[in-house]
Amino acid sequence: MPSPELTRFARAVSRTLSWSLSFYPQPLLNLRRRSTTGTTPAFPFLNVLGFAAYLLSTTCFYASPLIRAQYAARNPRSPEPTVRGNDVAFAAHAAVLSTVVWSMFWPALWGFEQEPRRQGTTCGIGRGVWGIWGGCLAGVGVTAVVVGVNGGGGGGGGGGDDGKGWAWIDVVYAVGYVKLLVTVIKYIPQAWTNHRRKSTVGWSIDQILMDLLGGVLSIAQLLIDSSLQDDWSGVTGNPVKLGLGNVSILFDVIFMLQHYVFYRGANKVKEEQYDDERQFLLSRDEDEEVIRHG
Image (cartoon, rainbow, N blue to C red):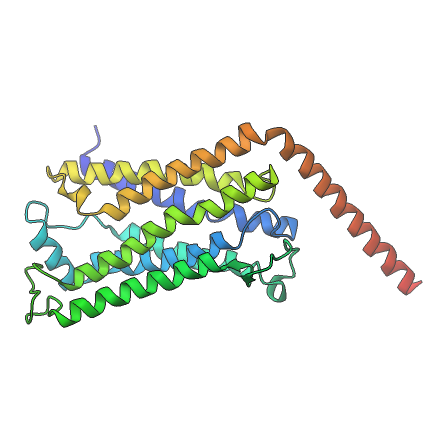
């Protein structure tokens, strides 16, 4: 029978691989179709913000002596954060891939076919999404100012290394909550776009299936870590990781219902229409090329 540590390691690796691999189907689909139609730029745009925040927060919990000391002070029965090296690696990988996918909505870079941009948007991004970006940055900034004024857990003022009062760990938590907020919101524009179009063509279902597996394994890893430490404060002390898994699973189920149940027939028809249109455009381009060189 494998040891608990080996089981925890295996689940951690499996979760990281599942979630990491989930970032590849969409850009590969965009490359194959030479198009981003069917997807909304808000999703990768919010992902860039979310995973940058997640990378910062996980790195602090994993590598910062000050943050780890303040975490231990607030969680004496379970002094070690449940953030692992695979969490940091996943966050860095996700931030890079999210940036690549967002760049695909810039015709000057890739030349992909785009959805017509609606009025009232900037770079295809609505005011509400830009507001979320600004609000998140402002929230973290205000938290940092409050902590700085009150000592920051550096030995002076209100917060000390014991983590009581305002401390720099609160800024890290604020950054982590940015990722949680983004995860709650980022799926909504795409789910609404699918509903409006009555189709999921252009939106890769493979990424959703891998994301679902990653979410389940993420929660399992968090529960196993806390169980091995015999202290469930490891769960309450890492609300971002717990929330990420649950929110991801909820929206993954919604997307699966849209793809396999609600719009199943429409997807086939729209995909055939898209293939016919692409074939017609390619044939027309070939004919024009022949005429120019004829």
